[in-house]
Length: 410
Image 1 (cartoon, one colour):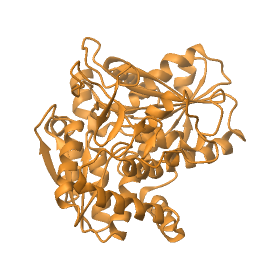
Image 2: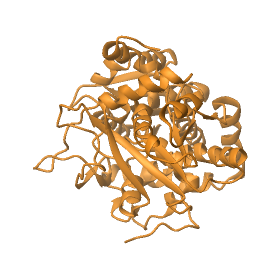
Image 3: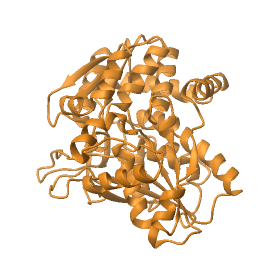
């Protein structure tokens, strides 16, 4: 079994063909090889450029709003008993979610590459909203590809995308969700790559897009490491970092700086979307033993039917409603560095009600899946164990779904 090297960033631990073990790669058409190679060369140059790093950090601090808060959920902890529950409120970042880090970096790279246009995919609408915000900030024209089903259920974010001057391209093929939006976005880029940059909204796709997104969202764990040491004096002897996992961008960013710690000290727990309890469909390829397949240019665990075709998913959470998962998470699962589980729609809704009932926090349905796992395990653990949940998005976008399912919105 391939092991994670302690002295090297995980995003760089791939072979010459872009594989982390069995996962990743560059399964792309011939027409994209040159644009992908150009982007790879540019990114590797910029990530070592002190001026570019300084520019990134300036916008993270003065525009995005870094660092985001790290707080103890006192009331929820007392109610449940057992382990202490803390949260990093990444939803306090500009725009309300972690997607702003990746969007900002992609727009900065696009400017350096001399591009005038940028396109991106979105499911929950946050990746699209953040890209539209960053594009407006940096003077780029923007198109967002979004499944028709998601446009209906994530109206607040769609309104924000249009308000930022971006165009939403509805996708009516397949399940009309995130998986189809990514596909259409990639097709568009094939024909327009000379003038247009593409931002993949998560740690999925060909190798370079996984790396750029992982490098960008790692801002979350860079902040968290400092905040934890300031709060506790050191990294606690028993720390559990719990994050929802769809494509896997927020979770990888939440974990990256802690990758070199022994899993007995710092455990990574990824929570996928288990879907409705009465449905056979889910968006949890890591939890339910899906086979390896190729999706959006990369080898990964992916939901498939008996014929090897991509299986449609079902989840109340548009941001987790994806049949595949980042090659990085597949690698973390196979190396036994992270463990993965799933929460159902109903468990996520219950967690949302419990968290908002006890705390001044309004997590979206994506991190509500992670809170469901924290609520499940905390009472079984001792008080000296620290659980930290990444509250990576706010629930403004989910207000219509929450009103429909719960009869109310906080």
